[in-house]
Image (cartoon, rainbow, N blue to C red; front, side, top):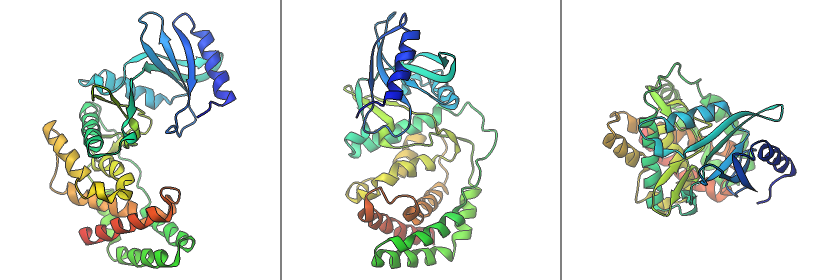
Length: 306
């Protein structure tokens, strides 16, 4: 993909300011980049190591990247070469990290990639445990999302809209209980918050590195598991042979992290609520075919949480 003129100018200005430390600037933008950050490959003059500059970055993202690098599992995240807060006289936070010679896992979305992702996100949950959670996240507003979903059904094919309306009617019989269980779930740690295969890079040595810490938040570990699972709802043949929730739970146990008996039900509630509200937010993810796959997930979820 091409790099915008604004991104190119911003990177050129950064490169001019830091030419004594970094050279060989090559701007790039991959097909899996969705944010507005400008990125480029660079070379560190002192070490001759290849790096990647990203600008702008949130202070929160930089903080968590640094925290993981300073944790007992530093190799989970790429090495940090440099950070800064300005470009020219303008407040533009930036970061230079190690260039990982590899590709994101979503380029090969098979069982091995999902397993590696489950382990990586469990490792993040372990590495982030020393940092205390100060407050619970705000409630998600599920009832409002369900109402918005009902309004959006008119845009669906009639048979799909009828089936979805029936599923929402079934959910209405006990969604208050399910929403309350989710709202008051135990929260004693952190989740990556953007858990998908595109945020993990795999090297030729089959090692993985986690990237993009901008959405880290206090939460329950099943949030990462269901977020990882959700894009795979359109790959039922893959999920029929594996369960990301069970897989992540297994890695958590190996790492000495708690897995509670009620976590399976919490995962089912999270999955069902996300599936139920899919028409309001996922029209571009697989189109109507993707929603039909999600409807099957919703119907199965209703049976599990009943």
